[in-house]
Image 1 (cartoon, rainbow, N blue to C red):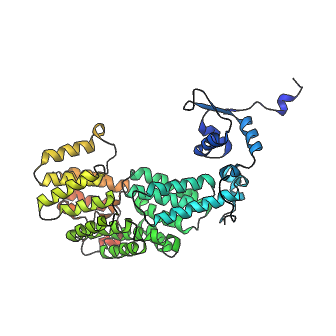
Image 2: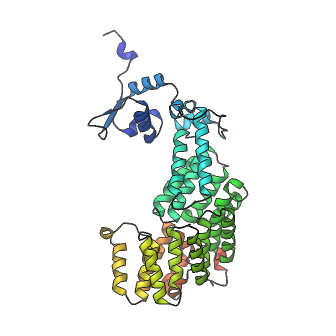
Image 3: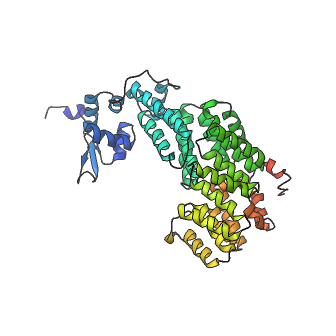
Length: 439
């Protein structure tokens, strides 16, 4: 051994997980796995491709030096283009985030921006079908350029939609959305889309009504966040008890993005809350005829069907909706309510058991859906507990508790009023003569 060699060449570090390899390289686990499979990065498997992995830090460093800049690995198939416009000083992030921005090629930045633009274009036709694809675009954009604030902000908004639509538990969705938003704001604190996402989280998670109101009003002044702020401000109007104003904003959103199902579905919900049930059923038929389907629309339609006079007709309609989409919580809750009021209490209780017993179905059902079944069974005291939990979780449906017709039977119950007193709704809703005071 050459004297002093151990001092010049320290013993390499063994990295035994994808996470530790990714941390060493300053990238995500998905990215380093892609480098291994696509470019042959030296990572070893203990027992076949699906087994545990390990790598040595000196091998990884040597491989990177041989391959050149990391960013070039990502863009070998990307056409050359003009360098991306960056709204941040990437070098300023090196010290605080411990990653080297010089490793991001101009082509990678261009491709990252293109993915964000593509996601925004697909957002114009937002539905439960294309939402996963939109989220994938944002994730890929972040992988290519972790300094892309717009990608983090768009991801945050997409995760919020997942929570409000009931596709993911609101608590899980909002926590992830908050983390993405924090990254966006660290990079660009003035980004309008990030401010829009912040307003949504203030309304749904923090229940900071004034902050949400100011955030939406500010975001509405910018074209790139205007459309995504309309629905948020409309929902805030619902929480305030201003249903006519909410419907007007949702209609404006539908006119701006006629291919999107989001605004029209929210318009149907505001009309349901206002008591225009037949109108909602007619709208739902029209929307469905255009192919803009979705479980949220089905849920709103089922809530309206509950309120029509013909019990047999509404039961048939809700059962048909449930057969099309048996997994949406509120749709199942409406079906359980319909069973109960039709005198089929056993069916309602069986459905309730499947929603409340984690061994018989999925865990973490939307509490509002469980409350619907309990109201139908005339067990209001238990329903109130689930309504309170729905509010705490940041459920979309909790924004409408002050106006929801199906909760009318609870309004004379002290427990419901106690929830409204304990829950911080916007003050303007208290002053709406249609609702009365909750003081």
